[in-house]
Image (tube, each protein chain N blue to C red):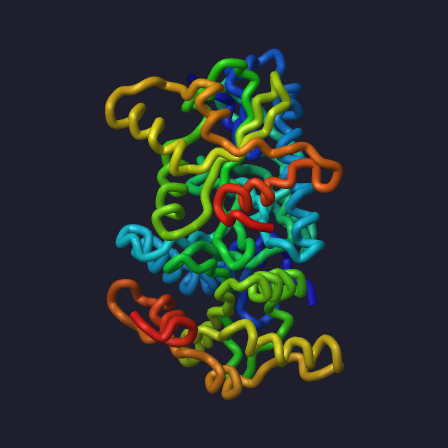
Length: 202
Length: 202
Protein backbone atom coordinates (compact mmCIF):
# COMPACT_ATOMS: atom_id res chain seq x y z
CA UNK A 1 0.00 0.00 0.00
CA UNK A 2 1.33 3.39 -0.98
CA UNK A 3 0.42 6.76 0.43
CA UNK A 4 1.27 10.02 -1.27
CA UNK A 5 4.22 10.88 0.90
CA UNK A 6 3.37 14.54 1.21
CA UNK A 7 0.27 13.83 3.18
CA UNK A 8 1.31 10.77 5.05
CA UNK A 9 4.24 12.26 6.85
CA UNK A 10 4.00 14.96 9.43
CA UNK A 11 0.34 14.23 9.99
CA UNK A 12 -1.18 11.40 11.90
CA UNK A 13 -2.25 8.43 9.90
CA UNK A 14 -5.53 6.60 9.77
CA UNK A 15 -5.58 2.98 8.77
CA UNK A 16 -7.56 3.57 5.60
CA UNK A 17 -5.45 4.12 2.53
CA UNK A 18 -5.76 7.61 1.18
CA UNK A 19 -7.95 8.11 -1.82
CA UNK A 20 -6.90 10.82 -4.19
CA UNK A 21 -10.42 12.26 -3.99
CA UNK A 22 -10.09 13.18 -0.34
CA UNK A 23 -6.49 14.26 -0.07
CA UNK A 24 -7.23 17.50 1.70
CA UNK A 25 -9.69 16.04 4.14
CA UNK A 26 -7.16 13.35 5.00
CA UNK A 27 -4.73 15.84 6.40
CA UNK A 28 -7.26 17.48 8.64
CA UNK A 29 -8.79 14.20 9.76
CA UNK A 30 -5.54 13.18 11.37
CA UNK A 31 -4.79 16.51 13.01
CA UNK A 32 -6.91 16.09 16.11
CA UNK A 33 -4.58 13.90 18.12
CA UNK A 34 -1.50 15.85 17.06
CA UNK A 35 -3.09 19.12 18.13
CA UNK A 36 -4.19 17.64 21.44
CA UNK A 37 -0.66 16.41 22.09
CA UNK A 38 0.77 19.80 21.17
CA UNK A 39 -1.61 21.37 23.66
CA UNK A 40 -0.55 18.91 26.36
CA UNK A 41 3.14 19.51 25.65
CA UNK A 42 2.69 23.28 25.76
CA UNK A 43 0.92 22.90 29.09
CA UNK A 44 3.65 20.65 30.50
CA UNK A 45 6.32 23.10 29.40
CA UNK A 46 4.54 26.15 30.83
CA UNK A 47 3.91 24.42 34.15
CA UNK A 48 7.48 23.11 34.19
CA UNK A 49 6.22 19.52 34.38
CA UNK A 50 8.13 18.18 31.38
CA UNK A 51 10.00 19.27 28.25
CA UNK A 52 8.58 17.24 25.37
CA UNK A 53 8.48 18.38 21.74
CA UNK A 54 7.33 17.00 18.43
CA UNK A 55 10.25 16.74 16.06
CA UNK A 56 10.06 18.65 12.80
CA UNK A 57 9.06 16.63 9.73
CA UNK A 58 12.23 15.56 7.93
CA UNK A 59 12.53 17.22 4.52
CA UNK A 60 15.26 17.02 1.89
CA UNK A 61 15.86 20.46 0.45
CA UNK A 62 16.94 20.42 -3.19
CA UNK A 63 16.68 24.05 -4.30
CA UNK A 64 16.70 27.33 -2.41
CA UNK A 65 16.04 30.71 -4.04
CA UNK A 66 17.10 34.05 -2.61
CA UNK A 67 14.53 36.61 -3.75
CA UNK A 68 16.34 39.12 -1.52
CA UNK A 69 19.52 39.12 0.53
CA UNK A 70 17.95 38.08 3.79
CA UNK A 71 15.24 35.81 2.53
CA UNK A 72 15.53 32.16 1.60
CA UNK A 73 12.69 30.48 -0.25
CA UNK A 74 12.79 26.72 -0.67
CA UNK A 75 11.47 26.00 -4.16
CA UNK A 76 12.11 22.26 -4.38
CA UNK A 77 12.04 19.80 -1.53
CA UNK A 78 10.75 16.33 -0.72
CA UNK A 79 9.49 14.53 2.36
CA UNK A 80 11.89 12.01 3.84
CA UNK A 81 10.96 8.86 5.73
CA UNK A 82 11.42 9.60 9.43
CA UNK A 83 14.10 7.52 11.12
CA UNK A 84 12.89 8.11 14.66
CA UNK A 85 9.60 8.54 16.45
CA UNK A 86 7.90 11.93 16.39
CA UNK A 87 8.04 12.92 20.06
CA UNK A 88 10.71 12.91 22.70
CA UNK A 89 11.87 14.80 25.75
CA UNK A 90 12.37 14.64 29.50
CA UNK A 91 9.95 14.07 32.38
CA UNK A 92 10.92 13.67 36.04
CA UNK A 93 14.49 13.16 34.92
CA UNK A 94 13.49 10.30 32.60
CA UNK A 95 13.89 10.12 28.84
CA UNK A 96 10.48 9.94 27.14
CA UNK A 97 9.96 8.76 23.56
CA UNK A 98 6.75 8.05 21.73
CA UNK A 99 4.89 7.89 18.46
CA UNK A 100 1.24 8.94 18.06
CA UNK A 101 -1.09 7.09 15.71
CA UNK A 102 -4.73 7.47 14.91
CA UNK A 103 -6.93 4.83 13.31
CA UNK A 104 -10.51 4.74 12.07
CA UNK A 105 -10.43 0.97 12.25
CA UNK A 106 -12.94 -0.36 14.81
CA UNK A 107 -11.53 -3.81 15.37
CA UNK A 108 -7.76 -3.67 15.06
CA UNK A 109 -4.56 -1.63 14.68
CA UNK A 110 -2.78 -2.67 11.46
CA UNK A 111 1.02 -2.61 11.55
CA UNK A 112 1.03 -0.80 8.20
CA UNK A 113 0.46 2.36 10.27
CA UNK A 114 3.99 2.33 11.59
CA UNK A 115 7.42 2.24 9.94
CA UNK A 116 9.86 -0.55 10.85
CA UNK A 117 12.68 1.89 11.57
CA UNK A 118 10.46 3.85 13.93
CA UNK A 119 9.75 0.65 15.85
CA UNK A 120 13.45 -0.23 15.94
CA UNK A 121 14.27 3.28 17.17
CA UNK A 122 11.74 2.86 19.98
CA UNK A 123 13.12 -0.57 20.82
CA UNK A 124 16.61 0.92 21.16
CA UNK A 125 15.38 3.76 23.37
CA UNK A 126 13.57 1.22 25.55
CA UNK A 127 16.68 -0.97 25.78
CA UNK A 128 18.68 2.08 26.84
CA UNK A 129 16.35 2.76 29.74
CA UNK A 130 13.86 5.23 28.30
CA UNK A 131 10.10 5.36 28.86
CA UNK A 132 8.77 4.46 25.43
CA UNK A 133 5.21 3.99 24.22
CA UNK A 134 2.67 4.48 21.48
CA UNK A 135 -0.29 6.77 21.85
CA UNK A 136 -3.08 5.25 19.80
CA UNK A 137 -6.41 6.92 19.16
CA UNK A 138 -9.29 4.78 17.98
CA UNK A 139 -11.35 7.53 16.46
CA UNK A 140 -14.48 5.39 16.13
CA UNK A 141 -14.67 5.28 19.92
CA UNK A 142 -12.76 8.49 20.62
CA UNK A 143 -10.50 6.45 22.89
CA UNK A 144 -6.87 7.38 23.38
CA UNK A 145 -4.55 4.80 24.88
CA UNK A 146 -0.98 4.72 26.04
CA UNK A 147 0.47 1.44 24.83
CA UNK A 148 3.85 0.55 26.40
CA UNK A 149 6.35 -0.38 23.69
CA UNK A 150 7.42 -3.54 25.51
CA UNK A 151 3.87 -4.89 25.08
CA UNK A 152 3.57 -3.73 21.50
CA UNK A 153 6.88 -5.40 20.61
CA UNK A 154 5.58 -8.85 21.57
CA UNK A 155 3.01 -8.63 18.76
CA UNK A 156 5.33 -6.84 16.36
CA UNK A 157 8.06 -9.47 16.70
CA UNK A 158 5.52 -12.23 16.25
CA UNK A 159 4.48 -10.55 13.01
CA UNK A 160 8.00 -9.81 11.77
CA UNK A 161 9.89 -12.87 12.94
CA UNK A 162 7.24 -15.57 12.83
CA UNK A 163 5.05 -14.35 10.00
CA UNK A 164 2.30 -13.55 12.49
CA UNK A 165 -0.81 -11.42 12.20
CA UNK A 166 -0.53 -8.09 10.46
CA UNK A 167 -2.45 -6.25 13.13
CA UNK A 168 -3.26 -6.20 16.84
CA UNK A 169 -6.92 -6.57 17.83
CA UNK A 170 -8.53 -3.52 19.42
CA UNK A 171 -9.49 -5.55 22.50
CA UNK A 172 -5.91 -6.74 23.00
CA UNK A 173 -4.56 -3.20 22.84
CA UNK A 174 -7.26 -2.00 25.20
CA UNK A 175 -6.44 -4.67 27.76
CA UNK A 176 -2.68 -3.97 27.49
CA UNK A 177 -2.91 -0.17 27.53
CA UNK A 178 -3.58 2.60 29.96
CA UNK A 179 -6.63 4.58 28.89
CA UNK A 180 -5.92 8.31 28.77
CA UNK A 181 -8.87 10.02 30.38
CA UNK A 182 -10.19 13.12 28.68
CA UNK A 183 -9.87 16.19 30.88
CA UNK A 184 -10.17 19.93 30.48
CA UNK A 185 -6.53 21.08 30.65
CA UNK A 186 -4.75 19.46 29.04
CA UNK A 187 -7.33 17.45 27.12
CA UNK A 188 -5.12 14.35 27.05
CA UNK A 189 -2.94 14.29 30.12
CA UNK A 190 -0.83 11.40 28.90
CA UNK A 191 1.82 11.91 31.57
CA UNK A 192 -0.65 10.80 34.22
CA UNK A 193 -0.85 7.52 32.29
CA UNK A 194 2.96 7.44 32.31
CA UNK A 195 2.85 7.87 36.08
CA UNK A 196 0.29 5.12 36.40
CA UNK A 197 2.20 2.57 34.39
CA UNK A 198 5.87 3.48 34.86
CA UNK A 199 6.21 5.58 37.96
CA UNK A 200 3.25 4.59 40.16
CA UNK A 201 2.93 8.05 41.63
CA UNK A 202 2.15 11.69 40.96
CA UNK B 1 22.80 41.13 12.54
CA UNK B 2 20.83 39.13 10.02
CA UNK B 3 21.76 35.92 8.31
CA UNK B 4 19.98 34.59 5.26
CA UNK B 5 17.88 32.06 7.05
CA UNK B 6 18.29 29.39 4.40
CA UNK B 7 21.92 28.95 5.14
CA UNK B 8 21.97 29.64 8.82
CA UNK B 9 19.72 26.83 9.92
CA UNK B 10 20.51 23.21 9.58
CA UNK B 11 24.19 23.99 9.33
CA UNK B 12 26.55 24.94 12.06
CA UNK B 13 27.23 28.60 12.47
CA UNK B 14 30.49 30.47 12.51
CA UNK B 15 30.68 33.75 14.36
CA UNK B 16 31.34 35.73 11.22
CA UNK B 17 28.25 37.14 9.61
CA UNK B 18 27.58 35.67 6.23
CA UNK B 19 28.58 37.66 3.19
CA UNK B 20 26.41 37.18 0.15
CA UNK B 21 29.53 36.53 -1.90
CA UNK B 22 30.34 33.32 -0.07
CA UNK B 23 26.94 31.88 0.59
CA UNK B 24 27.73 28.47 -0.76
CA UNK B 25 31.07 28.15 0.95
CA UNK B 26 29.45 29.14 4.22
CA UNK B 27 27.30 26.06 4.25
CA UNK B 28 30.20 23.73 3.69
CA UNK B 29 32.47 25.51 6.15
CA UNK B 30 30.13 24.70 8.99
CA UNK B 31 29.53 21.09 8.01
CA UNK B 32 32.65 19.58 9.57
CA UNK B 33 31.45 19.46 13.15
CA UNK B 34 27.95 18.37 12.16
CA UNK B 35 29.35 15.52 10.08
CA UNK B 36 31.67 14.47 12.88
CA UNK B 37 28.78 14.42 15.32
CA UNK B 38 26.65 12.42 12.87
CA UNK B 39 29.49 9.93 12.61
CA UNK B 40 29.74 9.69 16.40
CA UNK B 41 25.98 9.23 16.75
CA UNK B 42 25.91 6.53 14.09
CA UNK B 43 28.73 4.76 15.91
CA UNK B 44 26.96 5.03 19.30
CA UNK B 45 23.76 3.67 17.78
CA UNK B 46 25.47 0.76 16.03
CA UNK B 47 27.41 -0.20 19.15
CA UNK B 48 24.27 0.22 21.27
CA UNK B 49 26.00 2.84 23.42
CA UNK B 50 23.42 5.59 23.03
CA UNK B 51 20.49 6.69 20.89
CA UNK B 52 21.14 10.31 19.93
CA UNK B 53 19.87 12.00 16.78
CA UNK B 54 20.02 15.41 15.20
CA UNK B 55 16.55 16.81 14.83
CA UNK B 56 15.37 17.70 11.34
CA UNK B 57 15.55 21.38 10.39
CA UNK B 58 12.14 22.93 11.01
CA UNK B 59 10.50 24.03 7.77
CA UNK B 60 7.10 25.59 7.11
CA UNK B 61 5.58 24.03 4.02
CA UNK B 62 3.37 26.42 2.05
CA UNK B 63 2.74 24.62 -1.22
CA UNK B 64 2.88 20.96 -2.25
CA UNK B 65 2.47 19.76 -5.83
CA UNK B 66 1.50 16.25 -6.90
CA UNK B 67 3.17 15.56 -10.23
CA UNK B 68 1.87 12.01 -9.90
CA UNK B 69 -0.43 10.16 -7.54
CA UNK B 70 2.27 8.86 -5.23
CA UNK B 71 4.70 11.72 -5.36
CA UNK B 72 4.63 14.93 -3.35
CA UNK B 73 6.88 17.80 -4.34
CA UNK B 74 7.19 20.76 -2.00
CA UNK B 75 7.35 23.84 -4.21
CA UNK B 76 7.21 26.58 -1.60
CA UNK B 77 8.57 26.41 1.92
CA UNK B 78 10.53 28.49 4.39
CA UNK B 79 12.99 27.84 7.19
CA UNK B 80 11.59 28.31 10.68
CA UNK B 81 13.51 29.40 13.76
CA UNK B 82 14.22 26.28 15.82
CA UNK B 83 12.57 26.24 19.24
CA UNK B 84 14.81 23.57 20.72
CA UNK B 85 18.42 22.50 20.48
CA UNK B 86 19.51 20.35 17.56
CA UNK B 87 20.48 17.11 19.29
CA UNK B 88 18.86 14.93 21.91
CA UNK B 89 18.54 11.34 22.97
CA UNK B 90 19.32 8.82 25.67
CA UNK B 91 22.61 7.58 27.11
CA UNK B 92 22.99 5.21 30.09
CA UNK B 93 19.36 5.86 30.90
CA UNK B 94 19.94 9.64 31.03
CA UNK B 95 18.34 12.28 28.86
CA UNK B 96 20.97 14.04 26.73
CA UNK B 97 20.41 17.43 25.06
CA UNK B 98 22.92 19.62 23.29
CA UNK B 99 23.57 22.22 20.67
CA UNK B 100 26.69 22.27 18.47
CA UNK B 101 28.36 25.49 17.44
CA UNK B 102 31.43 26.27 15.44
CA UNK B 103 33.32 29.55 15.49
CA UNK B 104 36.24 30.96 13.56
CA UNK B 105 36.77 33.52 16.28
CA UNK B 106 40.15 33.06 18.01
CA UNK B 107 39.49 34.96 21.21
CA UNK B 108 35.84 34.55 22.19
CA UNK B 109 32.46 32.91 21.61
CA UNK B 110 29.89 35.62 20.82
CA UNK B 111 26.36 35.00 22.11
CA UNK B 112 24.97 35.98 18.72
CA UNK B 113 25.76 32.41 17.69
CA UNK B 114 22.90 31.04 19.73
CA UNK B 115 19.16 31.74 19.88
CA UNK B 116 17.59 32.79 23.18
CA UNK B 117 14.83 30.18 22.93
CA UNK B 118 17.44 27.46 22.37
CA UNK B 119 19.19 28.53 25.56
CA UNK B 120 15.88 28.59 27.45
CA UNK B 121 15.05 25.12 26.11
CA UNK B 122 18.39 23.83 27.36
CA UNK B 123 17.86 25.53 30.73
CA UNK B 124 14.51 23.75 31.09
CA UNK B 125 16.00 20.38 30.16
CA UNK B 126 18.76 20.95 32.71
CA UNK B 127 16.24 21.92 35.40
CA UNK B 128 14.31 18.73 34.65
CA UNK B 129 17.36 16.59 35.29
CA UNK B 130 18.86 16.16 31.84
CA UNK B 131 22.52 16.20 30.88
CA UNK B 132 22.75 19.38 28.82
CA UNK B 133 25.73 21.04 27.17
CA UNK B 134 27.12 22.91 24.22
CA UNK B 135 29.69 21.41 21.90
CA UNK B 136 31.83 24.29 20.69
CA UNK B 137 34.46 23.99 18.02
CA UNK B 138 37.08 26.71 17.77
CA UNK B 139 38.12 26.07 14.21
CA UNK B 140 41.24 28.26 14.43
CA UNK B 141 42.67 25.75 16.91
CA UNK B 142 40.67 22.73 15.79
CA UNK B 143 39.62 22.32 19.41
CA UNK B 144 36.24 20.82 20.27
CA UNK B 145 34.95 21.33 23.80
CA UNK B 146 32.01 20.09 25.78
CA UNK B 147 30.73 23.07 27.74
CA UNK B 148 28.21 22.17 30.49
CA UNK B 149 25.10 24.34 30.19
CA UNK B 150 25.17 25.22 33.90
CA UNK B 151 28.51 26.96 33.37
CA UNK B 152 27.44 28.63 30.14
CA UNK B 153 24.28 29.98 31.82
CA UNK B 154 26.29 31.97 34.38
CA UNK B 155 27.73 34.09 31.56
CA UNK B 156 24.51 34.14 29.55
CA UNK B 157 22.45 35.39 32.50
CA UNK B 158 25.06 38.04 33.26
CA UNK B 159 24.72 39.20 29.67
CA UNK B 160 20.92 39.02 29.52
CA UNK B 161 19.95 40.16 33.00
CA UNK B 162 22.77 42.52 33.92
CA UNK B 163 23.72 43.92 30.54
CA UNK B 164 27.00 42.02 30.68
CA UNK B 165 29.50 41.13 27.98
CA UNK B 166 28.19 39.87 24.65
CA UNK B 167 30.63 36.98 24.48
CA UNK B 168 32.61 34.52 26.57
CA UNK B 169 36.40 34.61 26.23
CA UNK B 170 38.01 31.55 24.65
CA UNK B 171 40.23 31.04 27.71
CA UNK B 172 37.21 31.05 30.04
CA UNK B 173 35.42 28.44 27.96
CA UNK B 174 38.55 26.34 27.77
CA UNK B 175 38.98 26.38 31.54
CA UNK B 176 35.32 25.56 32.14
CA UNK B 177 34.99 22.85 29.47
CA UNK B 178 36.02 19.28 28.91
CA UNK B 179 38.25 19.02 25.85
CA UNK B 180 37.04 16.33 23.44
CA UNK B 181 40.10 14.41 22.33
CA UNK B 182 40.31 13.54 18.67
CA UNK B 183 40.32 9.80 18.07
CA UNK B 184 39.93 7.46 15.16
CA UNK B 185 36.45 6.00 15.69
CA UNK B 186 34.45 8.03 16.36
CA UNK B 187 36.50 11.14 15.63
CA UNK B 188 34.87 13.10 18.45
CA UNK B 189 33.86 10.71 21.21
CA UNK B 190 31.90 13.35 23.10
CA UNK B 191 30.24 10.78 25.35
CA UNK B 192 33.57 10.10 27.02
CA UNK B 193 33.58 13.80 27.97
CA UNK B 194 30.03 13.32 29.29
CA UNK B 195 31.33 10.43 31.39
CA UNK B 196 34.21 12.53 32.65
CA UNK B 197 32.11 15.47 33.73
CA UNK B 198 28.74 13.99 34.63
CA UNK B 199 29.15 10.32 35.30
CA UNK B 200 32.78 9.96 36.42
CA UNK B 201 33.18 6.54 34.89
CA UNK B 202 33.32 4.55 31.71
